[in-house]
Image 1 (tube, rainbow, N blue to C red):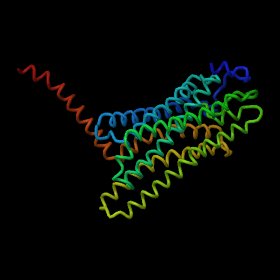
Image 2: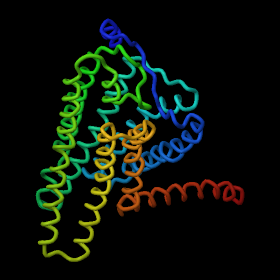
Image 3: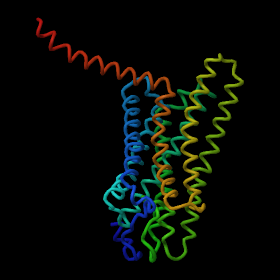
Image 4: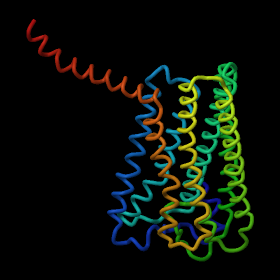
Length: 330
């Protein structure tokens, strides 16, 4: 239906991915790096974290549920772009329809913006937990968590729906080669004929709406947390725990926003197309790959939960191996 509605307004019904033109002879090596180094690690790490949080009852608190939501988003956003990238690199299946491109663009940017909102919610959760500890259970209850999730979905869906709708109304009459390995907004808009000021303004508005709003609020939250922890007459161990927890969140947020900022700025920098494509991929894959590693290594409760599950599974496996012998003796 989407393609039919756009067909009369577009000279191109399909597009080609430019990918990595300078690495034509090294595509299989690139697939190996992306497949083993990023995507498999992304799937295993995030699925393991989801398993631990879902299986351990003590982790069913707002903070860990937000981490679980972040893991689910990371899996989805990686899966949105990786299959087409893999097929393009392995079999040169680099053609995508306009409707398919707009659909991929929507989900890629929707999930990325949703991740930004989840990071904001995690910062606010830590702010309430440390600055207003006596009111934490009252403020961060199930109702508030559900409202935060609905707000995140509505905010990302409405903004990205508008962005993609504007891109779908453009007329493409020149090249149909997208200089990327997935449908990025500006990569597609750059192929349009005529006036694209609205689209560029919308892209800038998206950056302001998410990076320009979320980052200062997150920064302010952690400044307040730091001031409260330093002023509080708590033990050194309690201070260290607060710093450690907040430091873990800050590492994840720094990775996401730093890589994202470099990716957003790269079209304005005179760099080779392969480098720009690689930055766009890393913006999606790198934070999603390192998030579960950071949380799994640095969060004591998650480490303990993983060890608990591992020990239970090991005991079950051991009992299954021992039981036939025991039956044989009786």
